[in-house]
Image 1 (tube, rainbow, N blue to C red):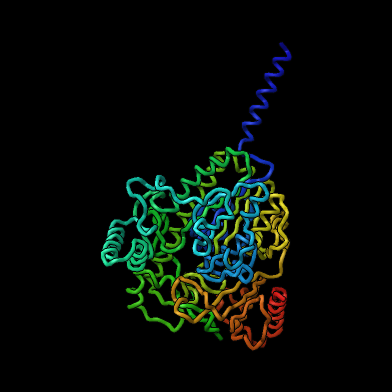
Image 2: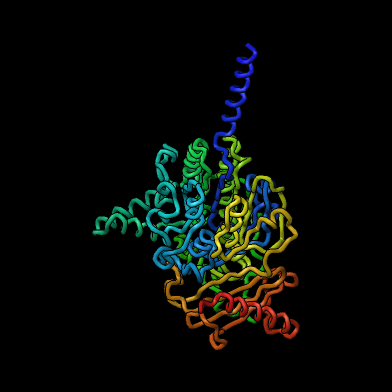
Length: 537
């Protein structure tokens, strides 16, 4: 009887332990949250106005990288760098057209590598930019076919958003009208949809709808079910969830707009060119110009010779919309974190949240990204990992560091070809520095494509920028220069230097000022040394 009692107790203990270990593995899971066009103005980065309680909750669990920079401030190239741990001149993705497996067929992505280490890798939403990968969102990267939004997760009374974006009845009717008329003219359905996307494209939408009226909300509901399935396999997983907001158009349910007052929305304090400007450093905000409510504002606003001048009222509207879209995104992140907690996965899951680049909100008279300025290149990065105490760090970090960091945190070998560095030492001691500077780059082409969003395939000019703790130094190069090629001084067409302690708004380019001569020479030497280290011989 005693032996049977002991056996029963042992069985119950074993069953209880086994039950509690469902979804837990010796290797940590990884929840990989990609956010489109999110600049670091969330609460965890010191912004007291924007309401982001859920991302702030993640920050309190992890490490906030306060000085993190992207490799190129546009979706496709920066995401290619994050997913491969390689810089744009090695991925050969500088635009929104090139297919990564065509230009770099032997490159290894983070999820592709994790498959070789026993992980199940799955994804939904925008992680890669779809224009730079195959129809399966890079088939080699995923253990199962990449998830598309299942229609059953949309709000039933509304159905799918028109053009994948809009739920306002009037907007949907306009889009449907253009599609009907275009098909009647002989266009294919795909051509008609593209035509409607050009002719009906407001910058924002504020209506009283549930979160799953839009793609992001539906994807998060689907992600919760995917996480539940993953938790039951016992296999470590890498689950990538891409959230499209706050990318244009700024569509978000009304309740998130109501968190803010339009009259309190801040305008950029410096909306001019720098002194001693390098003209190629600027762009004309072609992305936002393409939205159909912008020409009316442009018609009544005095335009400068650079950037894109928007009336003060429209600026406040856009900032309000951007903030609302951020708070919408924050609520969706909260659903993911709550699901981890409910499933008992939090203690064995690394969570990384990143924004692919920054975003100009009128500073320098610029909107969108597409530059080497601070507002475009600085991007949020938060990593929470089991066993590492929460903190924040001002150490310089880059998006290329994410791949090796996740390997290190998961106890996996770090592939030798990666160009980033593991940030695990910084997560354990935020006073450490693992690099001297962060590097970003951006192309200019002078062709009509640059006025839109289709990329920079023929870019002949490239600006390379290094950022240390106080300064940014940039050289603009012509004749198709890339860091992998031999440098010739004759190809330089401009130089910039900004001092962020003396001039946080980048109002003065001091590259040629006598006071900064020695610093400019030193940082120029550092950038040339970087070129030399990258050159393929």
